Image 1 (cartoon, rainbow, N blue to C red):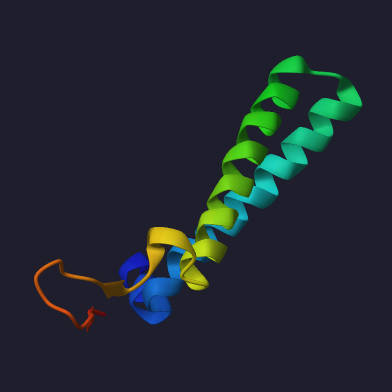
Image 2 (tube, one colour):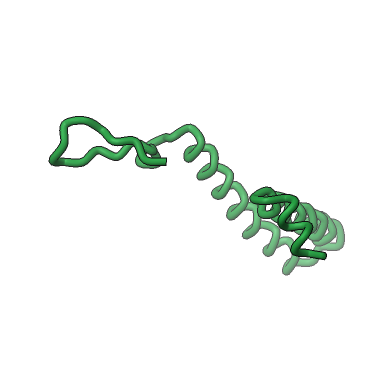
Length: 84
């Protein structure tokens, strides 16, 4: 059954799973803040740093910022080659 679900979703299963995990951790972070549970608040703070860093990387990769470009310049050739 799970194989059929993953085959149906293709490559979209990873972002869906990541968003599900993010929602669960946000709920735990809110619970930890309301109940003042330092372990939950610390876990949420670490997750938030990871989540923001990952999203900044994805945005930079999508916009091809910095060294994340798909064009590779070879030092011997004078023209760039595009690799996908």
